[in-house]
Length: 128
Figure 1 (cartoon, rainbow, N blue to C red):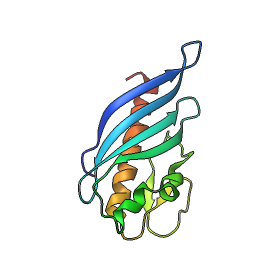
Figure 2: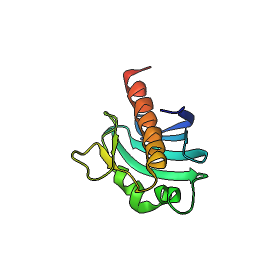
Figure 3: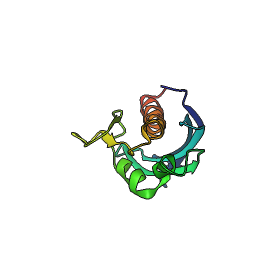
Figure 4: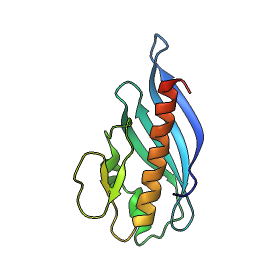
């Protein structure tokens, strides 16, 4: 696994001051260069709320598909208490993400960035 880097982290709180959302900007290494992700997590439900690709240098033919909504939706609602894994054909369980055909490295880079965000949330909840 290549280097992942949480570049920014923000917490949104409710009116009582309790954290409800965590927003992270994570950079990971794709096939052609860095991929910058924005990962929004529901702190209480430990679920991924939204995933956005902020920037990438992947090819327009295959790699750029990983920035499209149909791929990013595969991450929506995933359990942040456990890491995700990448599969090539069909997901056998809820924590598996099907890769973009022809863009496995790019798909893995996005997944690695999401897993880094999940780890950051888990450490926050453990008080580390």
